[in-house]
Amino acid sequence: MADQDAQFPAGAEPPALPTLRWEEPPEGPVLVLLDQTRLPAEEVELVCTDVPALVQAIQVLAVRGAPLLGLAGAYGVALAAARGYDVEEAVALLERARPTAVNLGSGVRHAAAAYREAVAKGAGSEQAAASALAAARELHRADAEASVRMAAHGLALLQELVPGGGHRILTHCNTGALVSGGEGTAFAVALAAHRTGRLRRLWVDETRPLLQGARLTTYEAARHGMAYTLLTDNAAGSLFAAGEVDAVLIGADRIAADGSVANKVGSYPLAVLAKYHHVPFIVVAPLSTVDLATPDGASIEVEQRSGQEVTEFTVPSVLVAGSDAGIGAGMPVAPLGTQAYNPAFDVTPPELVTAIVTEQGAISPVTGAALADLCARSRQVTIS
Image (tube, rainbow, N blue to C red; front, side, top):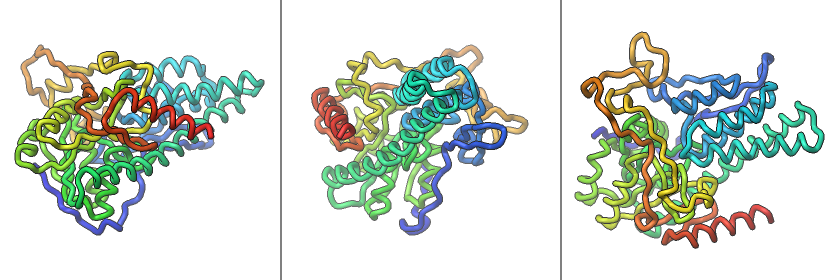
């Protein structure tokens, strides 16, 4: 395990991560992304001038994480409109880029609806593109606000479930500012605990096969001076057995109507371990991740990724001489021709989830009725 103690006071804050931004240079508008495949070795930006470039960035995980994918999708529609490309074709390309994360499609549809509405009202191409951009920016603002509220609700729940502070939190994958227009989802709760002096240790699963925990969550934890320890995914059980975990905090890529949670593969075994060891298993996600049109976990389409990500040990290309293609350069660790099972996500049933925390509050126990009621109350708040 790799250990890191807090390096500076909680009040000393690093600058915000520039994960995604819209720019308008003289040659035309662009979407600028922080290339997450290059972290933590280098902070390199990708400049997307068209939707195919953005789709590629999404598929290679240069931009990733449910809330941020929603923003990228919305800005992608605005980019196509502003550049004079076929907006409907852009919508189709973006919606197919990654199937499990519901936010991507909802972000795309939100900006597309604003564009279509403007066109239906007789707006010219420039004005319609401005409508799409305004919709994307509104999503961006709302996501940042949701992150603040999720952190507050999550910290309050954590104090209720594990009173007294000194929290030892286990997290999986990456759920911080790298996945959000704000400070993230589950990581934002841990960060709030750190800032209030209540975080004793952040246990970070390395998260196979692409090491989002090892590369990205530790990167964010180090930036904030948090006390953290990196561990292999299959070492988590020994931590539970030793009584070293007070709570598990994860994010979500899609939450079905019954409360089933799709998240980065490895989340489900953590839920089983947490249940056995009587440790709270908490999912932190914006309401935009809830998909009431998906009835249950069995109905969630789980993305299958290349087996090469398992049969080779992949590292950021910046560490590999002569490579310039992001993640993908690697060393074989299995015989040539080995078949690999490589789902990007797994699904945790609601009975293993202690609570789901959203920007509108938390539900516990997790049931379809409670989730539907929370979504209904959210719509009422939004309308009013």
